[in-house]
Amino acid sequence: MSTDPTLSSDGANRRRFLGQIGGGCGSVALTQMLSRDVLGNGKLEFNGGLHHRAKVRRVIQLFMTGGASPMDTFDYKPELERLHGQKLGPSEKPEGFTAVPGALMKSPFKFKQHGQSGRWVSEVFPHQAKWVDEMAFLMAMSSKTNVHGPGTYMMNSGFLLPGFPCLGAWTSYALGNLSDNLPSFVVLPDSKGLPYNQRGPFSAGFLPAIHQGTVINANPNSSIPDLFPKEQFDFANHKAAQDGLALLHRMNREYQVDRSHDSELESRMLSYELAAKMQLSAPEAFDLSRESKITHQAYGTGDSITGDFGRRCLLARRLSERGTRFVQVWSGPQGATENWDNHGSIPKELPPIAASVDRPIAALIEDLKSRGLFDDTLLIWTTEFGRTPFAQGGEGRDHNGGTFVTWMAGAGIKPGTAYGQSDEWGYQTAEGKTYCYDLHATILHLMGIDHKKLTYLSNGINRRLTDVHGHVINEILS
Image (cartoon, rainbow, N blue to C red; front, side):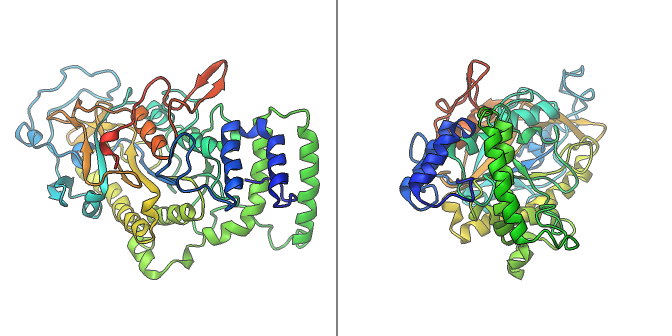
């Protein structure tokens, strides 16, 4: 991950340079970058890993903002059909609920079993249903909150409060870049807006700031604003840019001599140097016109319903195969509408948001498999919490941290499996409860990282992603 455009490619010079900036990048990441030099191929060895052999090279995480309803998507509950309309829930409003619970409400959607695994899937996901035999389901995920902001933080950083590094930042810190010319951690938010907590879920927290998520607008006309000078400024030519960068680099390094522990300064310097490299690599990576008509049709990039999420899923695949280690694709902005926060009406609000992601996700799975990327890529589908089996306002559902569903597919995953289950109503977990800590521990394990050993000293405490919790969910691993 050379950050000096003036350095030669000689390994000794590179290692000498890395040693000089060790305080800014972190010793764990430097160890990994040096191992790339030893290998001599410019990339992390497939079986490399920080603590043990890795099965996963890269991660694509699909995050459904707002709390996707499990009993209307992947968690079939026939008991709700039998008890529909009965007032069997809490008589008073529990803490965190936005309204007094109504009667039990069956799913308005038909469920059907799919694949050899016989996995039940709602009719709102007809395309994903075709791939259930590639997936491993966590059927009893739980959260410590049913409030969007803290819940979104928890699923990304393991903590309910801001200020802690997210999963993508931890993986960037632990393993470094796969490519010198693209960010290690990229975030592709919904075109309608950022999720709850704005950029907080992509934060590097107390880690060096270089590891925070690089937020990219997937709009085809302005993915990376100001990457190139405007045409009217003819003085900003290639020669001037090279001279300016060289001068700026010398000034930055001189200024940094007495400020070696300022990670924000180091991050800003590295980010501008990465931007210079991206002037060569990014245009090709973000140019979706290079993809075939068949590929665009599969992702639904030209469709008004699937276009936005489809473009971002396709871009996630392009970035991943070009060396971005962790890509996060968000469905839905914060707020009460146009996301998975279906308080008003499950029958009216859930189908449109489900349709916007279903076809692109299925296309992404097929694309990764056809290109051989499924062998070393981990795909994750999740949300911040679930929803109540009780009606709200007639036909909506309230927030519920008691149980929800996550699925994983790809490298290191035992396909067609499931772990845990919720109770007969889908209100709380019944067995095999898993928290974000267990999900994160499992992801890190697949990437060759022991979650108990990946730590960073902050305010006198050896912090880790999983805090003092977490276990690897071996039941879903191949």
